[in-house]
Structures are given as structure tokens and as C-alpha cells.
Length: 155
Image 1: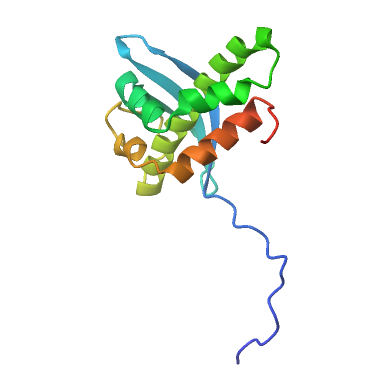
Image 2: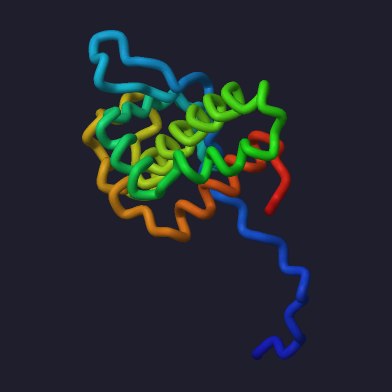
């Protein structure tokens, strides 16, 4: 028997499989000054407990993504609406948040491909291609996230 009732236009959104929360970072990796890390708490709906994953990012990969997406220019425009004395601090916060979101992209790719339920580190070169594949739309989404994080008006 086929159900012919119309679907509700209020279908609830699908919950994400993983919940990732920044634990700390970005900060330099102790034994490698060319790398920074962000540590995330990760919980999958089916897991009883979460894990911590340190995501290492090479500064050269961050710089390449920063340049390709013209993130410095965009961030400068975003903070331009602030009083001059607040701009430098907001820019720094935005830059750090950008690094967090780029780390989250690497982490998401690793999660999508399957990770064991154990604390671990994603090495700097692991899933680095995720940063190289960012499209203009991805950068626009990233800037929207930065705008929201910095509490800046939508232009």
C-alpha cells in the first residue's frame, strides 16, 4: 500500500552525524613552529562518549587558503564598520576564527571518511587537500561565519 498523504512542508532538518566543538586553539604545535593546531571534542550520536582530535595545520597551507580566498581583504572590509580602536583586535579574532574553521573543514573530511572512536591527531598533511578544494562559495560561507562570530552586520 502506498501512502498518498502530502508531505509536510515542515519536515525537520536532518541532524548532523557528528557534533564538533572547539576545545582549544589555534595555537602553535610545541615541536613544530611551522604548524598550528586546534583541538576539537567530537561526539557521534551513536557513541557513548566523545573523543578529542587535534587537527594540525601547516602555516603554508593556511597562507595558501588565505591568499586564494582573499580572506585578508574580506576581513579588512568586515572590520571596517567597527570603531578604529577595535579593528586590530577584531581582525586578529577573525584570523584565529578563520584558522579554526579551516581546521574544522579538515576534521569534517576525516570524519566523513571514517575515524575510529579514539583520541587522536590529524597530521598536518592529512586531508590538506580539503583546503585546496575550497570554492568561492566555500569562502563566502566562511566569511559569513566570521561575520557572525565577530558580531558584525550583514552587508
